[in-house]
Amino acid sequence: MNVHRLFTMPFAGVYQAYVNKAERKGRTREEVDRILCWLTGYDAAGLVRQLEAKVDVATFFAQAPALHPNREAITGVVCGVRVEDVEDPLMRTIRQLDKLIDELAKGKAMEKILRN
Image (cartoon, rainbow, N blue to C red; front, side):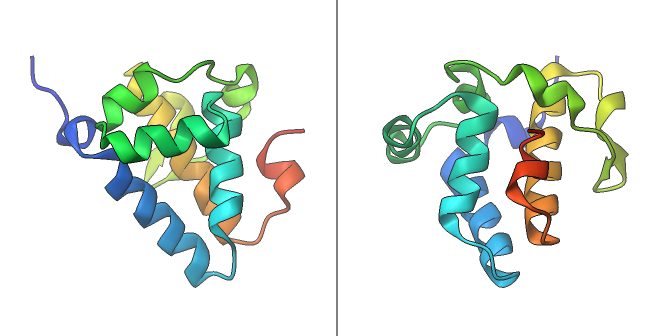
């Protein structure tokens, strides 16, 4: 079975790309962290531990304390792919995170991003 190369990338590198995208659009690292913690159930300290441990993307999501039950409300297209149509559960979760970060970068209000 082929493993997507994204799954084996260090999460810290992916995280930094999310932060860079948000900051280029006038948003903050704290907002990216809030989205990540909402989606995965990590608290701030847990997120820092995962980044410092240099875990890969698959491990980051596998060790997530509790994926948010409202994540299934994240729909739409990101990178030309309809999020809700992605079959692989890990890839769907990654695409959901991509979609949330895209919404942040586009200036959407945090309450709407977090599906509150």
